[in-house]
Image 1 (cartoon, rainbow, N blue to C red):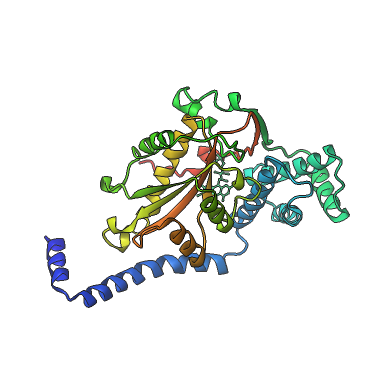
Image 2: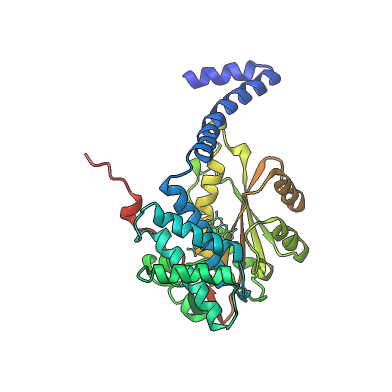
Amino acid sequence: MMSTLKNKIKSLMPRRLNYWYYLYTAKKAVNFDIRRRVYDKVYNNSSAEKVKRDLTLQYHIVEKGLTMPVPRPGFGRLVVLDLCRVVLRYESMKLPFDELEFSQSVTVLKEYAAFHNEIGFKLDKELADSLAKIVYRFDNVHGTNQMEVTEKKYFESVNAPFDAFCMSRYSVRSYTDKEIPLNVLHNCIDLAQKSPSFCNRQPTRVHIVKSPQKKEAILAIQNGNRGFGHLAETLLVLTSVISVTKDIHERNENHLNGGLFGMTLLNALHFNRIAACSLNWAVDNERDEKIRKLLNVPENEVVLLVISCGYPPENFKIASSPRKKAVEITTEHVG
Ligand SMILES: Cc1cc2nc3c(=O)[nH]c(=O)nc-3n(C[C@H](O)[C@H](O)[C@H](O)COP(=O)(O)O)c2cc1C
């Protein structure tokens, strides 16, 4: 009753007034969110969450470097040095050694040192000393090593029960140039369409990019595909229609619905024996404008995510990216 009245009043308002009304409610809602985020960035410097975030950001770059199709000797020097420093900072904060972020950071640093040892590449003194210190000091800390698999082994669970299937998918950053037929991609997208969406409004759209020029232009402005993006046979760019949201309070629905869609799509690609990796679209307005122009993305759509994909080679490496346990991320509200 109340909302019918509200809609009636809105429909009687001149368009300009309507615009200001939407802008006012939007600003109020968004400011609430922005304030919390900015406060967290500026005033919340020393929390355990942040040191663990820094560990994860850095160890992830190193695990990716170690599992590239062709790892570059001496890669990521500054990141590795910084990761060594953050590991020591974590220790000085007297945080537990069995936290995943810490054990995984120590593990990738040990793997980095072992990799260069194996190929006989001499690291500079500062880097070698920092690594030696970590290896010696945290001898008893163990995480999950990166993996090397065959194509056959990687896809052996694609027809297995859900739990085995789910645990068998990884982000894969090695691709051959074998063409993925359009009908196979359409089948994957049909499966992704089965993802739930708010009131079944189905806001997600997919751009299938095979044009070499367009792929190159997109990857040049995406921050996170160095060393493997150029091998992708196809890029899938997920966008979402903002016009299907009703008001500003539904502003996160495009990304939320796109996330659900994206996960089903990743599973569908895996099911079809296609290797894939999500590529973030956390970019500034200029880069966003560039991709929009390149793919003719309509004004009322937002770009959500890029997925690089291709059939994988016979042998390839995968980053282990281990997960925290359910008990570590749950809060029970019982009774
Ligand atoms: C939203 C999102 C953005 C991502 N962006 C990148 C990226 O830019 N580059 C990359 O190599 N991996 C990217 N990834 C892949 C993650 O690194 C990967 O999913 C994570 O480490 C977990 O590993 P898994 O997918 O192998 O289970 C992204 C994943 C998500 C969900």
